[in-house]
Image (cartoon, rainbow, N blue to C red; front, side):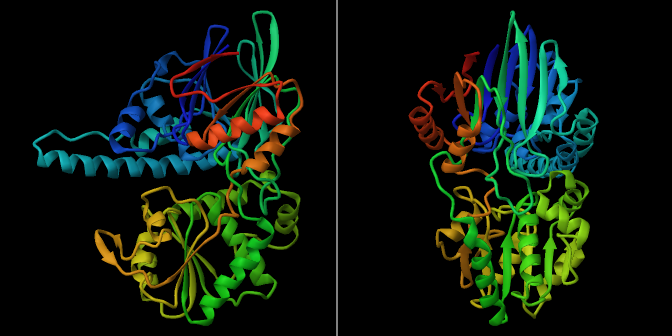
Length: 464
């Protein structure tokens, strides 16, 4: 078997791995590469293989850096099945539609710039219609249900505990008279999640391809996070201020809503108005409710015996633009949760524009902000910051919590690898910035000395 690393090799975006097995071609993931505009356009538009020659595609979960280029793959001629879990299929359907609208906006922006130079317009990477057509090729399986994808290749999805429907991909392979198990970790959750189950332990692993997003870092302790959120929010509300929370639509929004719900039920938070202002977040939360098979025992019992964990009387989900605009005139204390988590796009920018200048308010970041994003600039203390091209003084209190991360940190990744059984003859470290991958690879060599540990580079091929 040959594994070609065409994405998420010494970086975290554009996951894409081509496996050649028994003369067949299996693609693991097909994510959007995000980086400098020119490089991103080139890599996302042009595949390093012929999509028409693929025999199957397997998807671990619905984040855009893993599934975001699937409509383009199908547009360029791939007509086969795209295998994933049921929850991943449902989330991908809304994520890809949203991504398609982003592609339209990006193409319009670039075309406008090109028109000034007398150049022709560019087409979007794909359209909403093409995103919907790609979803028709999805074939879903539950966890722990082995299914044959190619001659000599059986796949089983095992829970990864990262986001709703996320899976470790277990490939049991027969090739040239030998049988072996190749495990692709996908993105691994931290365990002890408020909503999701812990990552499952996989048995009899011969070869491992593992993520290392936080392979060299340790997250803040999770046991203190609810107390921190409670204090930050209560202090702000007591000053008649507003709490503005930039949050990713899938995962973080549901996590913070659940936390605020539990704190309210416990009587630790006043029942002030809470708004989730993001159409994608609203749709994603509805999908969460449809997939209790992904929940841990605690939240599953809460859902069956008590109430909707993502809904309460003082919580309003907002889709309509006009309803969102009315929040600008809100005078009383409130909590506003809006996308995107890095404050780079979406309605959150309007809420920041209207609230970042008031010292009574709190801007609470609950996720990672990449370098150069508006969120990163605010967290770095830049003042003023540009929002919609205009400078805005930062007078609101700024706080950040990383304990809600959906990715295992270096210690949790170590525990994950140590839990696996089997010889682990070779370990391939992917999906992390180079420093994180190399740090985790060094750690692996120390506690898995019998394993050959590699950190593949972009375009590299490895024989298994």
